[in-house]
Image (cartoon, rainbow, N blue to C red; front, side):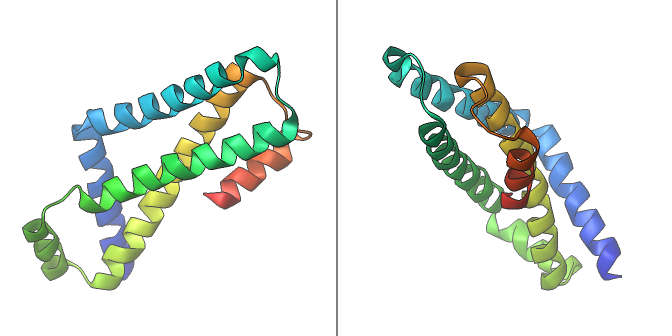
Length: 138
């Protein structure tokens, strides 16, 4: 029963995001805008070294992910949350939010990495290990 509740709640969260596309588009715009502003800040330096690139990537990714995760918890009003607690166990709700946010953070991490490579170029030593670390971080 717990697994079916979790699957239904994750599907509900994805349907909510698909109905409100402005949330996903807003996150995409936020990632591209903040990376572009960072690019404009470093444009006179011709190129940044890999340590600055790495630090800037993780700081921006942290703020992007905090913004996205906080939005998923406040997107529903309190009455709807009480209704969900009557339909499913609190454990199912929390686990489904964790899984949904992990998937969302993974997608945002890949999007942030793609924006960084687009604007700054790839400054990593091993793309595979870096992406593996990003996946573990999300």
